Length: 359
Ligand code: ZN
Image 1 (cartoon, protein in one colour):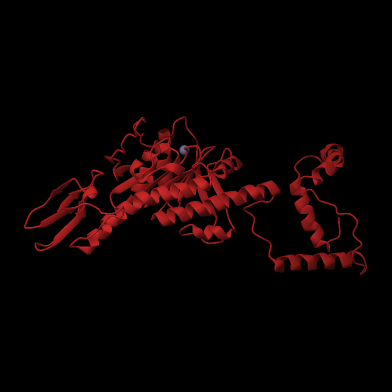
Image 2 (spheres, rainbow, N blue to C red):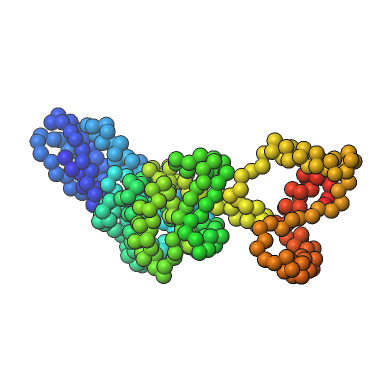
């Protein structure tokens, strides 16, 4: 038996000849079936829907269906608070079976209600258009829909999220002219399905376009090109991220936003966010080597270093250029250089190596 609900979607319910089915009135408009099935229509007496069916499994289907609309709204509020979907930007879509619940275009995500969502099938056919609000315009299907469908169709995603968070935008500028964001040696990489701490996480970057839907072909091709990717960054725009379930998509989104935040903070401090961490053991070994060298050069008198000379490496220019141009330039700009954050950081590392003595 098929029950057609108010979202113009069918729910298939398997029942036996002797089963009695009770449906709340607001959940269906038309019932078609065959055989001696008894159907009793009742109105919900409270705000809570009543789910009583001859088949327990089907009652779960309908219950989940309603929960998914509420879930999209709940996640919208969370992601708004996190800065992912502010200014009506960004969007969310969650799939349950063949139905995709999607936020409409240009709405304030933190205020969206369950009946304001579009419902599409996996092929992009619109199953339900949200009603026009009194005095308002008819809600518009999100421009993100063709992009979402690529992830749903190519990756069998359970949910796809689109974020406009500041740091999604910012990290793409670190890789201007390049088509991949890379990061490694971060604990939160483990939150991405199939990745471990020592793996290099690659998030492809595509170029932005004037209109969101124009990104669809490029996004589809990029998803096909990067079979391990769970997200695609759009330069100076944001990110599309997905997962097998909505829980996984949310986790991927949270971990990636964390990694982008870390990358931005590292960059501010002048630290390479792809370089492996130096362990305490490694630091001690290096320190010991320095001590040995120090002792060797100073007949056992430690802590006598007053100057550090940095060698130039791999020079391909004539030595006269080094003497006549580079040395004067270095003398003139040395002080300014050592005041830069990156230089300060390196200086602190060097100081530690030399028993915390200033160099
Ligand atoms: Zn966008």
